[in-house]
Image (cartoon, one colour):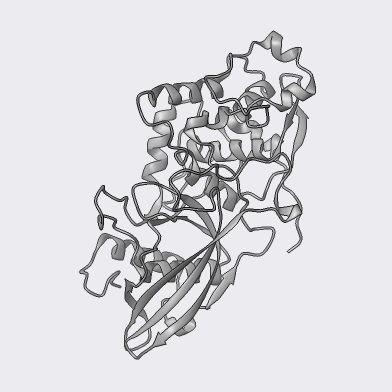
Length: 368
């Protein structure tokens, strides 16, 4: 398999060839479905990317004025135990989890504070910098969570909104026990080493496409052949989504893809020109914008009320075909294209400091 008709055996081609064999993917054009959509309740939910500029999961999104981390004082156990339910609802996801498990030294809040401190001197207007890749993978793995009020080891009834739980699921994917597609079962959790957790996570992602450089034309995007084979097989044949970086520059706009539809623009013996519309759940509708408020967090889940935020992205490309009709390479015809595509799953269950997520996470019930 060649990722590009003019390319030799590239890293992407070797990775895709291994992926095709491992997952028994179909590469014959005529055998691939022209459209596909994950059925409910497996469609991913939308949420904020918990931007670093707000303090990540330490953002008090449900409080008046939505205070950012650094603009409010650290809590004490005494103050928390005196709080009425309405005030507890206004705490950040990180604070709520720490309170729930009775850790009044607030390790999650401290982690976010340390991360914010490391960013001092950088451009903190970068609202798009957050945990978008991790909320995307968690949105694909877990059904949308309910809002719940639970009494944890602390003995305090803590109210979690749907987005509070989404933030914690995303944080678990960001720092927790990550298996990835490489079959590695060992990892690090938040209670051991945050830096090692991130390093482990980054090493164990199956990703197609590399990061962009600074200049125009410096992006090494997935080939159209890779994109079409993965979309048609995973969404169309296997009923599984994947994460796509939808903006082809140095910024990362990861979103969970769960639907596509393709139409033929022109068909010839050696190639086929295709237009494909990819459907994602999104933390931002206008992916070309430099500044945007993004998708707001919500107390109630979005999907039951039909308020899930989705985006359709159109791509045009040419696929080259072998004599027996297999896709052998491609050429982008549109300026818009995915910057990268990756696959990753967390290990079943919850471990480490975030293990109490097994009690907090309650999925909504939706009919297919």
